[in-house]
Length: 148
Image 1 (cartoon, one colour):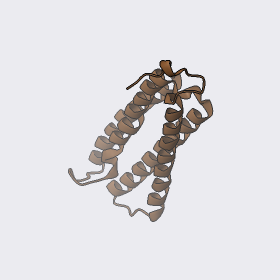
Image 2 (tube, rainbow, N blue to C red):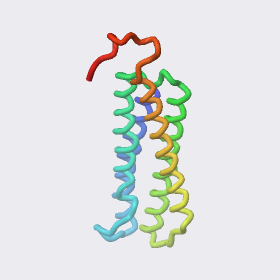
Image 3 (cartoon, rainbow, N blue to C red):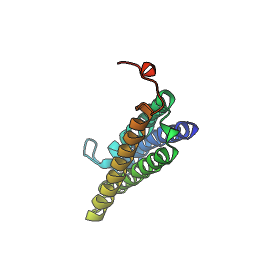
């Protein structure tokens, strides 16, 4: 659980820093206010995908002990975090190029797509681990299963 808390905290800090970077970088380069750049949504992605989602996973861990399948949980954690890092890195790169007036390449979109695939794979593994955690074991007596 400590790993989840630490990662959520790092994403919270990165999200705040991403917002400050967007504001200052666009001002420094006289980027027209209101014109779209992916830098404007970097902080939102970091705060939502990193900070908030990992806090929700922390709650799921506390309630269901989803890490009782340690290999699955580890796969989730690393796939999901790699997906966030790759996706946000490409957003930073693409957004910075936009602010600087430089052209971007299709490689940026391709690599961002890989980041999204990693995020999706991580979420699928999370749901497999969650499903295993909430499913009754072979040794659970019928009267121990809560009816909901």
